[in-house]
Amino acid sequence: MNAIISASELADALRSERPPVLLDVRWQLSTAAASGQPFDGRAAYASGHIPGAVFVDLDRELASAPGPRGRHPLPDLDVFGAAMRRAGVSAGTPVVAYDGGIGWAAARAWWLLRWTGHPDVRVLDGGLSAWDGPLETETETEASVPAEGDFVPKPAEGAVLDADGAAALARSGVLLDARAGERYRGEVEPIDPVGGHIPGALSAPTSDNVDADGRFRPAAELRARFGELGATRDVPVGVYCGSGVSAAHEVLALEVAGIPAALYVGSWSEWTSDPARPVAVGPDPQ
Image (tube, rainbow, N blue to C red):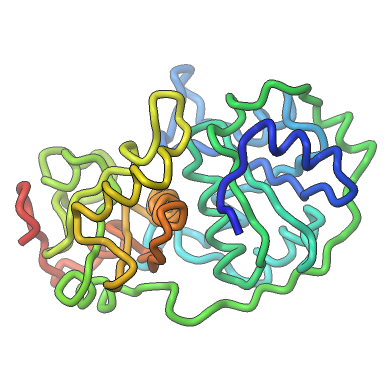
């Protein structure tokens, strides 16, 4: 099953006899826009979205409240399941998620659905900016509320890393750090209390997964990129970022490349919540 879908393929799928459920997961990492107000994904959705899409709130429905487990810990499965059913997700219905960026938030929805057992989920390659079809407002969508879905989350084993598992994988396999290189090196840290990286982790910024248009690079290029870091199908691979959102995008890129990977959901925000955990700085993994 392909993990991504192009805008033209999505348009064809929406006209088919078995159209996908659409999830609009617009979200921004930055805490405030230029106006000084926090980004409002719901308002962006209301002003215009792909026809039939249902808004999903990343902070409230794809994550639990921030705390010792990180800024975006795993959601309560009852909350997540209810959100998916509200959007019309059923076990046998294809799903496409999109956001307004390069796919971080959409990949979080993709990863959660795949982790909890949905077999047919894809991310719109390039996000909403790649869509050249019509948009509709929230009022228009309310006139055709999707039927309640029947999806019940059933988490898979082995796809999620905790702090100890991430530390062990950095020694025995390949642990990729999906944040920007300057955060990995500890030169800057705009969000979390400590800069640097998990000892043994390798820098692999998420931004390098996509081209200038925000679309994923071809599978062969991604395979070569990750292969240079030692990440192949033959070794266990894990990914972390700041809070488990952009790392989901890296897991998606690895999926496109044909390389399975586990996600450290708590990521750096959980790792640094315990001052006893070691921190490495500089360009070298150790």
